[in-house]
Image (cartoon, rainbow, N blue to C red):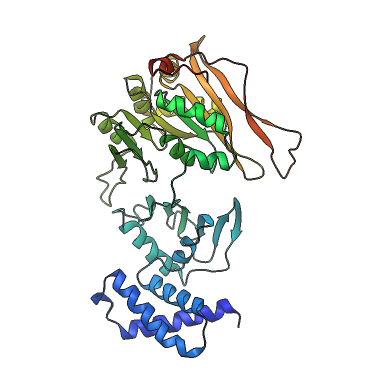
Length: 413
């Protein structure tokens, strides 16, 4: 019997003994955890079992009773950035940008379903056959998407984007070589001068991470409203901060609070900046209108594979919020609302890079005019396995520098 089998056997044995020995309702979570650890250590100490195995067994017994079972062990591993559960038997994780399958599995589909109900109940959400899809978060802020059968054919499906325990900073982006120190200093000037900045990229390109880093350049004396589907931004240093989160419909179809609702409410809260985690639909119109009505310095993200693709997607999203609005009016709205678009990408070697920083200049001849300021260029050292390159300044001068000058900043971007 290998070590993993021994551990599993011990967990099952100790769990049975704990359930037979304790009245679980007598203890809160902290007390129960202490009781289980004491009990397991006493029982296993005389059996020549290593301390790390005893700790593992005690943690797993507690997790299976009050925690998230197997998921607790996965979530405690800081090197794991994403978890994908495709039914009770198929668990995949992402480590260092690479996917791998775990040998572990949940005891049963029923156990996995119980854990799912425990997860959604902590944030007041519901997931069931009538409402089989839900976005929520764990208590540590990790983003969770859940899809239940019969929608998910392989069984209950859970996707977790792990929440970083330390807020992302521009310094870390520089360390990861996503941007350079010089470009970071230019971005700080743009944020301080209240340019409306939109971050775009594909899935897993690091949009929320970049938004979080950029948002920490916001001056500490401003009133900031953040709006997200699942609250995960970690803005530090801003005292006057309000974080808003959407809410799904309940089982009777009532009580839904959308991003659109939250943007409209935020406008009545005297914001100096509005930070929208991600725009996916009709709320794009409300966000653009907010940017166009004096709420400068707004930050947001969206899914797109290029800067031009993001503009097309924004047009489509605005039409979802205002069907019948002329395309010309939509493009004028986008061109006057957004000042800077930053495009991120996850490259072939799984690294995340800033590909382009582009100025939105205006609207001419029925087209939105872009002015690329920085573009990523690969060098000769690049191979199929490893991308080598850097973000380089184009020869295009920045055209709209009036916000910089209004803020007393006379440096060139």
